[in-house]
Length: 239
Length: 89
Image 1 (tube, each protein chain N blue to C red):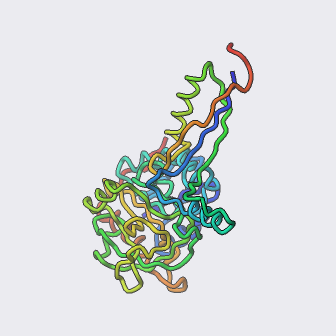
Image 2: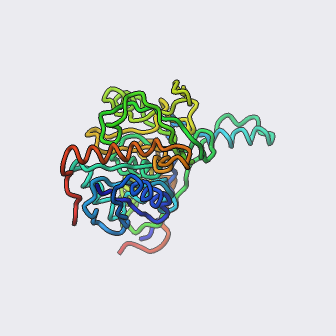
Image 3: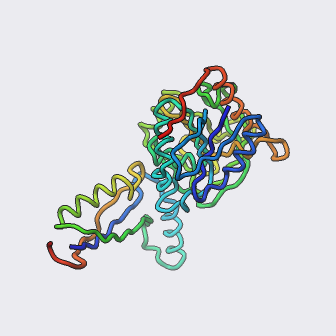
């Protein structure tokens, strides 16, 4: 199983992702933003950070990188794309996911453990979890408030596309007490074809007990299991 | 001709603007209780080559849709257009 990890100027979680992937026993290849070759990746991770300094809007400039053209083609061909934090912002700006991420309602940068309830198991990323499982995964962002119009939010729920919700430590509903004020407590969503996941919390920072949680590692394992079960994923676009 | 174009980008009315709320509260504390609402946005100044104002306006509106605003959460408007220099070629 080969994870491709995108590196934009200002990306900061790429090496943490590499560490987590290798800890899970898989191969990690770094994908430079100026390249178009996804190097045969089975899953492309868009990691956290501040790509292009978050100029104009978080993720707005990264979407024009040559690498992103290949990532969009890969996603359109049902390849697995996983955006974490800034990666989620990029996916929304690239219109691979609906909605947008705005300034935290607290106006503060929040770096803290959070608890995520798995809301759907019908994705490669959550397939090994049970619905209702609670994962401890930290957030680290200033602009993570998920926003969309009511119609879009209803559609996401109707189509079972909310991947994770913030909950309290005991697993009960957060009811708005989230790190960022996200609408309907949403922490992660998938696209219509369920092969693109965007999430604000950082699973790569919850990959070993020393970090306070290894729950994030479950998501890496789920992806690897789905790839080995379904056989060959579409070959990453090379142009 | 070169045109100077001002573009204003603001959050849509339905999108919560915590920055605006903080600025409003700050103004209240500084003795401006009459301030009822504040929305914080972005101001962009563009210099654009073009033949006439109408075509420049159309180009800028296309730029707003493609990049300058996030169409999910932001509205934009052209604040002003003026001729910066040059004459029709």
